[in-house]
Length: 146
Image (cartoon, rainbow, N blue to C red; front, side):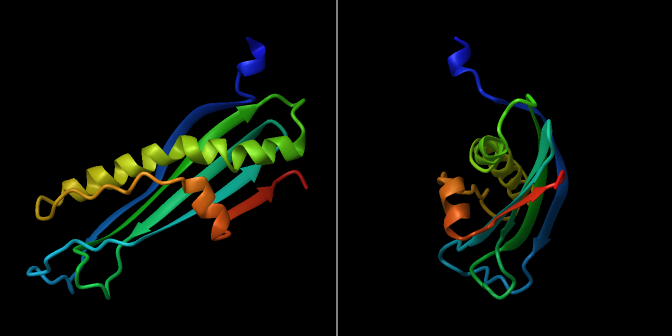
C-alpha cells in the first residue's frame, strides 16, 4: 500500500489576495461575456516543505466585453519527508501541488464573481493547468536552501 501513497502532503492553504473591480469600460449591451485569464505559479522549496503559490488575473480593463477584473492568489503548504530527492520533490511540487491548488483557485474566482450580483457567475474553465503553465513558462521555482 505504501507504494501508492503520495510523497508530498498537502497541509493547508491560505488566500493571499482577493480583488474584485468592476470594469468601467464594460459594454452592458455586449452579447457575450469575454473573460481572458492569466495564471502563474511560484514554488518555494526547502528541505522538508514547500510553499506553492497560484495566482490568476481574470479580465482586462480594455476589453469592453469583460465586466470585471478579478485577482486571486493563494498559497499552499506542502510537506515531504527529507529522504525525497530534490529533483523528485521539484517535479511533484510543480505538477501535483499545482493541480491540487487549482480547484481552490477556481472556486474563489467563481465565488467572488457571483457576489457582484450584476453579471453571471464566471467559472475558470477546467484545464490542464500544469501543462498550460509549463508551456507558457509561468512556473517560478526557488530553492530556499541553495
